[in-house]
Image 1 (cartoon, rainbow, N blue to C red):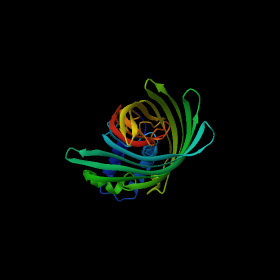
Image 2 (cartoon, one colour):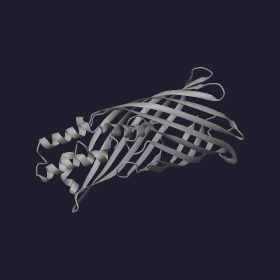
Image 3 (tube, one colour):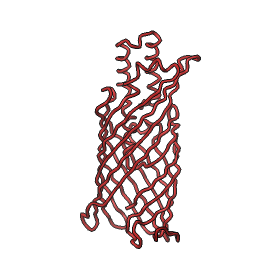
Image 4 (spheres, rainbow, N blue to C red):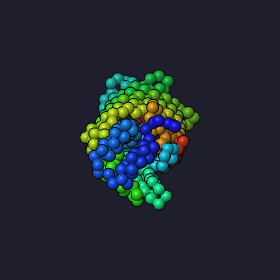
Length: 325
């Protein structure tokens, strides 16, 4: 059995401790919260908390909705990111520097059943919500033969909060688990360096693009509800995307539209890559693109796209509206 952090496995262990105390009428005894605190501290749940924060701030995941069935009870994951990027200055004929701003939101919902006996059913209805705002810089360096490389670094501030409702027999555990495992807040800093390698070229009547990206985030929490929630973790993410863009005869606002087809594969790597129940997801989608300025082939372009997401233990959809540079 995997020894990676898992809230479901840990909850079963911690609930057994809390239930024994509660049923013995000792739920307010100081020894029991201390025992629970020690269990929470040793469970390494910070890896999961860091992954949630990373998903709210990562540049590789946009507006999307996931259903996760990989580990423990099923979970729903919703992600929304609003990025903005603009050219700052030209360092040379082949190198441009961009500045970036973004805001992100994530909700991870999971219900944990708890049935200490056949006649005593209970549930923990839990929701983790993360918010993030960040800024960064990116250099686009054009190489030969259609290749370019894009080193970047982002810094973000995030908040993660948990809100849990106790139902049925689980209500006896609320005095033990509130403020330690459930119903708490924490803030965090993220520093994320990354690099992308891209190739573009004309293929037939359209253009093809292949882009690979890898990034590592260092995430450290502060201002936690309880010190037991403190974490300092590193998370890693990668992606590979292939797309084909071809002009159409359609026009909008006197600008010629293009259609887009693409596929991508991305996920996490490292020791705690599947802590949220999945470690990779594939994407197949299509979209439309419209230049922001007419009769300028290199102008920024507005892109509307939608895709189906799937992988081992995960499925979902995504829709996005963005600017291509």
